[in-house]
Image: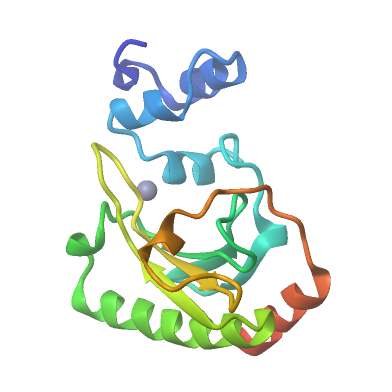
Length: 168
Ligand SMILES: [Zn+2]
């Protein structure tokens, strides 16, 4: 794919619809897929409203569509930052306070033994986010929990309601 920067937004949308452009092409052209998705009616990732746990003017917390564990959650900034090194101190403080609260809630709601936290934005284009990955008592401790195999998200309405309630 040529550099997508020569196309306008609508032209790129059409190319995606035709299956001629994918996520990697956007990234390679320096276009943030997360921001592009938001501006274009969730054309890349689909609407995630059913997975949102909490949002305010700065952040969005949602269950991951291809989780590594039940309760695998992402916290993302609404504004575009490439990685954690780009965010201002105030935003950094706030996002970690949200992460702390959400970790405790995930631990309780999913009866996890622990919740791991990581952020690893890398490559030519990224949208800063933090991942929270539960570890269950049947699982061994350690960094392998960061790379547990992904599976398809299945909604658990009862747990989702609790998560939303506790995050209010
Ligand atoms: Zn972005």
